[in-house]
Length: 535
Image (tube, rainbow, N blue to C red; front, side, top):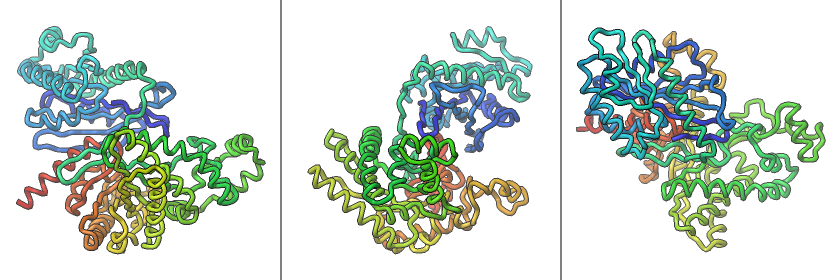
């Protein structure tokens, strides 16, 4: 399933390495990952089973150029080969755009190869993928060993048809890169015929007790940059007074409403968590003199006047500055517009026959009064919309716990909030006093010298940040026993972090769509481990 992220101009495709146990799938990915020429690669994630591993990482192959103006990111997965891990194989295969079938060339492995290939075709169909249309490449691995079948004989029993066949000895790297290139090329050939594919929203996915969500849907959140912003959103920021901001926001409202309608329709009855505006306002504004000049010309402003406005909104430490709920309190018209767009969209979609469950999340709360003010605003605007539309929808309001103080007063916040979502990226920054954007200059050395066991932005710091999560959850539920509690951020896709969150008795984790398969596996494993411990 191709994912198109229009905000960052990127297309993501998924490639799965499939085959019998110990055929060399893991070796292929490890050789690819170790290639020094491979740039822009993400962290490798490993999920171990008793006899095999599921690996995942992603990279952006810059030399492939673009498709329809979009950069291409490739996600690589392996599956465990043993037959008793069929549920895992089926899950990892979900949404695959291409498959590398790694066959073991040893003549003793013929039956295993045939059984695994049949299993691949079955699982593709169970995932509603056409085996004839998925980009498929065959790799005949272990050609360096004695007693291997000739290629012609393997072709006769595997019947690759028109699919490319690559001979390989993955243990020494032979054929690894050729296989990857062939598979990616086939995926991109298919993709070129689907350039107009619309963005597919990943629905909420659940595992026993600890569910995995594919990310909260932010409304203008997620630190967008100026180059991606339409002039429509720049105007309310540049307005001189509240009247001017409201007039500009009125013009923006239909765009926001349309976005939310599309999300609710795609989610089709599932719960949708929407975080209100979080980034500092200056991140939406032009920064370079060229950008300032272009926007000034388009809006009829003077260059000097616009540059002064940009400088006025600039902050020395924006991540600790005028952002999150602080914006919603000082400029309530911004949050009011977003909330109106949410519930106008919800009413429209509900009147069209689709059940909707919006949940509004207030970011960066640090005091009870902040949450009370913003929650009252959400409920007031929602009530106005319901009265105008003649439709009633449950109003659910919660908050992100990103500031250590919020975790400490969670019992007070839970008197107002209906759910908590621990924003562990910001919580880690504020607990350690590390800037996530700058810590890369020293964190690797900290890990190497064992000052820290791991990068705390990749795997949650269980002794510090983790205890704030545990404490906040316990205190929140002491006040509100029905409080739903989860985590959003990159930690929501990290297996070790997910196991820890299960011990904190969280209800869900939320992560980027491409991390969902690994997160679901980790959540399921954590649940089984927890039940085994309890039993």
